[in-house]
Image (cartoon, rainbow, N blue to C red):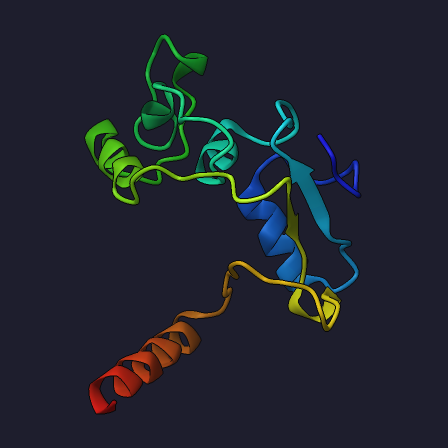
Length: 138
């Protein structure tokens, strides 16, 4: 795995959260060849691999014969997890590397393909309201 910090978390979501909370956390980058160091779900959501068939159990209820019923309980059942995975369609890895960094860590001329907003519920609700307002009045 190509990454600047060897201490970065294998969970891509937790890595993004840590970068958002602490400006001293350095950017983390990885390439399509990363087979270790990033969880299978993170690799699939970035388009590096297809989701493993067992991930539907890990993100929902667990399964006795898979990792001793280990589960994150993010979805109510495996069917809901499958629907979530299928919803965006095929995800493709867009470049040689993905760089995760805080907004204030970017260079002025750096191209940004997408971004993740992390905030409290009211902040995100207000941003959504602004987007709806702009679409309704234009």
